Length: 246
Image (cartoon, rainbow, N blue to C red; front, side, top):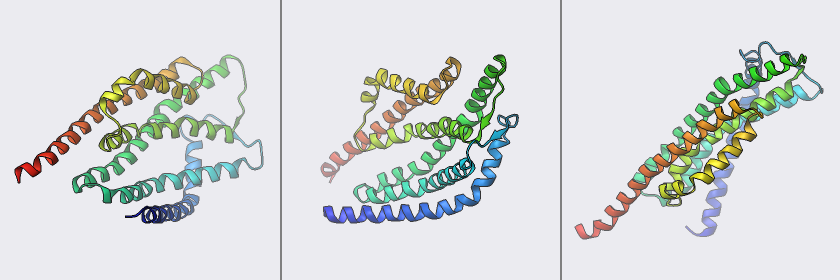
């Protein structure tokens, strides 16, 4: 394919994703209300009274949740379109392997969101509430601030949990090796510490609850990269030996 044909194909794939996203957003309109009500009455929030400090706050939250739902629903389809765009340049075996990354990616995203929502978020809310009670402060919770804080903690975790899949994919492409990941380990640890500091409130225990899983995730990524790297080397060796066998 020429460069123009590649650009045309990419544009077609992007149009597919945009159209699918628009339909997913329409579906999100119907799912947003029950989801917002569920998040307001979950165990960690049932003792909090939500308030709207601006007339537009409820609408703002409704639209944000709608677009987030649309993006989550669209993500597997978008990943498939990306795979369909690059798959002609892959061997048949590589196509099957990379196609399996899509359900893995979705699973890891949901796992990251679930971990942050069911484990980290309740702990942080309880900690903040205890601090306010100890200081005799009556909390007035704005619904906008509550959901922004919820999104700040849960969504980055879902994205960060994609690290093993991203590393596996880059290793397959030859852009990353396990040796490289081991060599930059201390720098990666520092970056993950900074990310954890942005996600969590300025409190040591919650910071460690975020940092430790991220560091473990990085080590798992190195292990996965090593497995993928060995498979790449094996495939290259078989490809080089194939002509001699003929």
